[in-house]
Image (tube, rainbow, N blue to C red):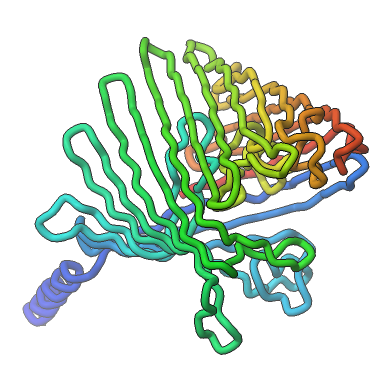
Length: 423
């Protein structure tokens, strides 16, 4: 009997080993946060929410040359949902049970046989270079094909994507509604300097749109556009990092626009002080001169509230993006007095660059007479290796001209506290 059992166990082990050898390896990673978010835009209203978000990425790895990835998100605001309890962010009201799983990414990776070329195809996260504070042009999820390779000191990437398209009521393509992008990035890795030039082009249909505004009106995106940029990062001496971004963009029937930014950071034993500045061209009196972007441009996080700079959990980009503004700020990062507790502090002066004669000036679009001083302070307590407690504060003293629709807003205060778990 013992021999029979031993033989059966051996057979099971052989079959199990064979199955494991042929099966793909599955890896899971992600993050989750739960927190409270408070926003007071003075006379423009208040926001007080408890918010949570769960993101998980699943990699199905067949080999070093082939894998697939899916990336999901579930987010809720406590107490809020729509009538059907269905859609992104729904299911936070009593009873929960919302149908609200978002497919953020789904793509495959493979290496072209007998070549060093790697290809990623599908809905994926893609970002153009941004050395100072991220990319103002493109850093988002979209359907794309990206090919990359390396030769000596140069990393080269070429890409094609379709960020916008429309279908009719029968599911067929609407003519002249697609937006196609293509371009290339080169990263030249020198001894103490990395130079990353890039170019991107958008081919648009005459009736293409980039979505709907808050009133349900179509937002047109129907101008062929070209962008050229460069990102630099240098370490001329120990502990000193110099960063620079420059990007120029022009729509086919509009005046060109640009953004330049620079940052100098020096690491000391106690903290990393830095000086950061940027200038984004604005619209002149005829409403042209603001650089076009593919998305909302907030991934260039100039401050907590200029761009998507908030640590969490929700309110950021209150003042729109860095385009049509200039600013200069002092920053101190990695400031530590207590073990496992670190701080980031920033003070930034911001001013608009759009001509004051523009009629669309508001809390996101600033004229030359609109200015503000923003104070940011973030504290992170690393309670465990994978769990952080974060307190995030921003206070802004504004000085908007009477031509600006937000002229009655004197200050803005944002506060958030959250627990963030990564795995």
